[in-house]
Image (cartoon, rainbow, N blue to C red; front, side, top):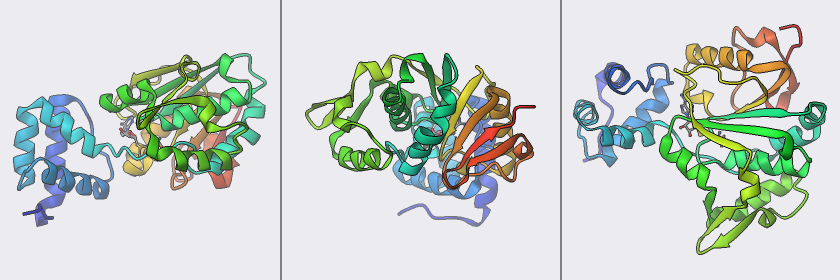
Length: 278
Ligand SMILES: C[S@@+](CC[C@H](N)C(=O)[O-])C[C@H]1O[C@@H](n2cnc3c(N)ncnc32)[C@H](O)[C@@H]1O
């Protein structure tokens, strides 16, 4: 029988997340409850647990079960050139500013399996910026980071990604950037050479570098308002004066206490620029 919602389902996830934090130091206590509930029901189903208490017992006793649960709690969905107009706006509006710097640092926070960071690397190469750029691609999910670092994608998603690439103003053919093996594609190594893939939590870790652009897309939607504010604080600390922040199409800094430090730059595409004086 599939697990279903139960009345006390607001309290039980909280208890589970407290114990996960105590045992594993992963902090889901301020993630948005609605999406966490869906993820937990999915995990209970996958892991054959009839109740959340049974799931809790399993993950606390066995670290492997915790890492399996982590796959459900951290939503992986990604695409290359996702929301193509965002990448077009980076290319046409943001990069002309970035070109004025002799060297650049870009942080892709919550990079999942790498689609976003490889899209950026391609864009930077086409605009002659890749050589002078260090890209940091971070996530809390180690398994996904390893996949991202390999730079291998399934062949059956490439058609959609090619379509996105063209809409993002792609100047060549996407196939120039990868080689095809059986059923998969591998990105060329020159795209990877300036990317550092690192485990970093937006919830528990600190800023690690000054950056010129932060792209953090489709991550903050899973956080509650309080946690979003912490993350905007990190971004404010990390960005240099007049640095850029790109968010997902359903995310905004508008309601955060840090909104006053940013101006909308490409409003429709959720790109913000930090004010100089801060
Ligand atoms: C839906 S994916 C977004 C991928 C990509 N940014 C995009 O827009 O296509 C969300 C990613 O955020 C990561 N994530 C969740 N919580 C995080 C945290 N506290 N710190 C860093 N990354 C986190 C997840 O592991 C997942 O890979």
